[in-house]
Amino acid sequence: MSSLYSYPAEFYDALQSGVDYRAYCDFAIKIAEKFNMRPKTALDLACGTGAIAMELDKMSLDVTAVDISDEMLCVLYERIRKSGSDILVLCQDMRELDLNDTVDMAVCALDGMNYLLDTKSLKKALERVYLFLSPGGVFIFDMNTEYKFRNIYGCRDYVLENDGVLCAWQNNYNPKTKKCDFILSFFEECPDGRYQRFDEIQTERCYSKKTVLRLAREVGFEECGVYSDFDYSEVGDESERMYFVLRKKG
Figure 1 (cartoon, rainbow, N blue to C red):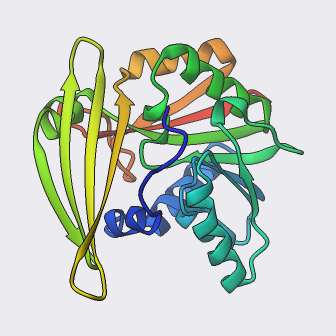
Figure 2 (cartoon, rainbow, N blue to C red; figure 1 turned 120 degrees about the horizontal axis):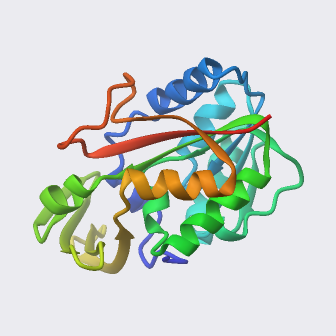
C-alpha cells in the first residue's frame, strides 16, 4: 500500500474533476437510512484531499477524515481553514485506524480499498472499521471489478489533461497476482513555459465480490447489498465498480 504520493496533491483533484462527490454522499446517506441508520457522525476513510468529507460536512454530519498521505491532508487542511468547518483530520493507515469515538457511518470512496494488496490487510482494515462503528452503523465503499482491471486498465495506456496538468498513465495488470501497477507521469506547465515532471507508481489489487463478503462476514459484518451504481443496480459481468454496503450488528 502506497504511503505517500510523490506528486503534488492538487494533481489528484485535477484527475478526479469528473467525480460527482455530492451524488456519492447522497447515496451513502440514503443507503444508511434504508437500513435504519440516520447518521449523525461519519468517517471518510482514505479521504485524499477531502472532497467527500467536505460534502458530508455540508450535510451537517460530524465528520472525521483519515488518510495516510500528509500531502493530501495538507490540501484538506487548507479547505477546512477557508470554509470554517470543524472536520477532524487524522493521518493514519486504515489498517491501524484509531478513533476517539464510534461513528454511525463510514465511507471509503474511489477504490481506496483496492490499495490493500493482500487479504490480510483488507481484513485488518475491515476489522478496524467494524470496531469504530456504532451498533447498527454502516460501512459503504467501492472497489474496482475484475472486468475493469482486465478490460479498462489491462495493459493499456492513457493520456489525461485537465487544468494545466497532463498525465501519461500506463497500466500493467497481472491476472495471476491480481495486481495492477499504475505508472503515472505528470507534467505541469510552469509560468516560463517549461514543464515540470513528477513520476509515481501505484498498485491496486483486484478482489472478487465473494472474497470481500467472506472477509466481511468473518469480521462480523452483515451484508446489506452490493451494487454497481447509485441506482442500486446489480453487479453484472461488465460492471466497473462494486459498491459494498455492510452493517455492524446492533
